[in-house]
Image (cartoon, rainbow, N blue to C red; front, top):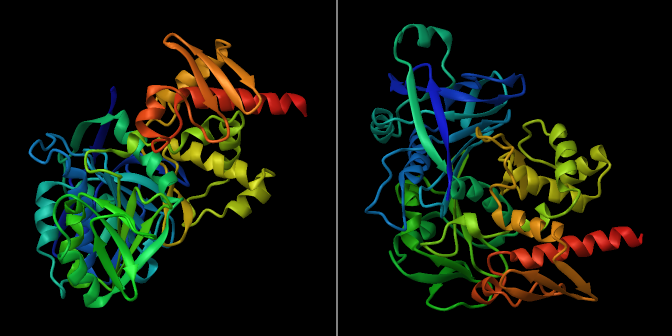
Length: 442
């Protein structure tokens, strides 16, 4: 597994002094264009304590390696923040690639001026973490995302530079999680103290299933209809310090009860954790994006749809379809392509994509999806022969029989995962050839 290197350069370290939280920014893209140190927001956070605790939670997830907690990384990836005019979204991914965290500071929690819209990294250093942990319920909190020139000039010589590895599995995880989340529905909800008691009563280890039962959420050691799988309940640890502020908790999951998401409703804000199907399993290998990326039109369509994005808090597929002249299914595939490039995420509460631009090289989509690259090589080599609803794929290891109807294959990958981690390279190759054959026949 290869990795790129992300270089962060901040004009000064982030700090919290006399109730003023100044978050230093590093590069990124705004409506006004690429920026070295963009300035997005300056104003008051109306509920300081939950905002500080939730921001600390996002930073804690970036530090965590849940599968092997004893081997903490020697480097830290800074959280990403997106300003889209009516909210601030802070995002991070765990070092193990299995937990995605996001804090949405909504319009009701913010009172200030928006200077620009866009995405950037923000510096969260050790002294800042300690200061955030000390914020109390009555403490004021003035927030600046991006430092003004006066602050920078008074900290002459305080430039901060960080270089951290960005493994492919981490980059691919951001892409996979937004597609997986878009397939989730709400499966349960608890309000008030019932939510607090439930979360505090969860086991720390193992795998359990959670389902709504009347007004309660019930935990079972086996899957029941409508339940959500929760593997490694300790991965919800960053929710616990926020329980004293919680208004409710919502649980989301897909129909196959594998991945899950937990959304804590806080005063004027939401804190969301999305967990991979197993404690040891990162999102990077889930393969949820591959079918959409394998379409011939996805890359060109992504160019068209991408030009229409404007850092909106909600991306409306119908509106994009009208503006682009593309059918809705191709817009969705284009959004998947843009998601792999770090340009869109998915909000469960709004049931909508949102625009952001992750600050890494987004031109290597095929490199981040080796299964897709291998499938295209099979197609180019003429290794696929169609026969009605099935296909034969010639490989160095022998012939593979593919069923186009259910996506099954006679290869080891399919027998190991049975489609639970996306299609294998043989199925992808067969689908590419089948789509091309349909186009030719029209």
